[in-house]
Length: 371
Image (cartoon, rainbow, N blue to C red; front, top):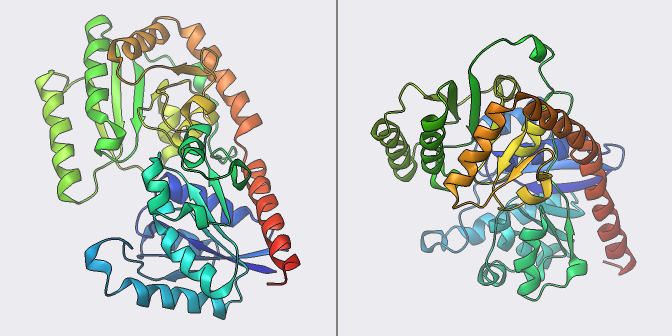
């Protein structure tokens, strides 16, 4: 088996990136590849990896460019390189592009190919800052996330686009869906309560919808991290709910470990960021209203599996919600189309095979060069 080292953004919590990494390492062809995952801290994600019998190492990798890391980053890089050497690692893959400097250290010392997975929207300046030009290969989750890489001078042949995937056996339509007789229409947004997820905008959208339709409830699924910034934003979201007098219409569901069940409870998902949650909702047979951020436009078929609406148009988003509330047949039709599209586009097997094909080419080329 070929040992591959993976660098995770987090070990103590599970976000979209951690979900995608978990799908990848647990579905690799184990006859060919042996995954080893490095997490910067311990906790729920690291435990999930261990439970799946994935070798997991806890190694703090301080932010490379922060002043406070100058005394510790090189020792951490040396320890990481020694780990890779000990296991005879043949390739390193990071699920967080901010860890690129650590990949570069391993590449320089051990002459192994390195892959950076781009899950965020970058600027051309960030592409230069984080050494993307020195990566062996880059995986982007959308055309939009590929664009700044090309604009910064990265050759297109060095970049592959691999959309996020979803476990279709776990995220499924509710078999009792047709028996539901609830008069309430449930809209949801899912993700950590933080500025990037734009829950405050979601509250403003809910206010507009509530003016037109009363039998609707809005779920905010997720919790804020225990940091000053995130706690402050959570407080602002809750204050806005009170200001709009939406306490009876908006439900703070908090963190949920049963996201497949939470999805089944919804009639519609709204996302104002991007990520694997889109694939999870569609696999659950739910239409999705999103904005043209990240991979959203490539995951949602506008007018078929949901709608892609300009981010700043609160009125346009609320109008689309009302349209689906008042046309239940259209909503169900879109939900059915969403599940079908998820089966065709977001399966774990297709996702993993695309990445394994990249591994095979990189390792083969490396061997041919006599490294």
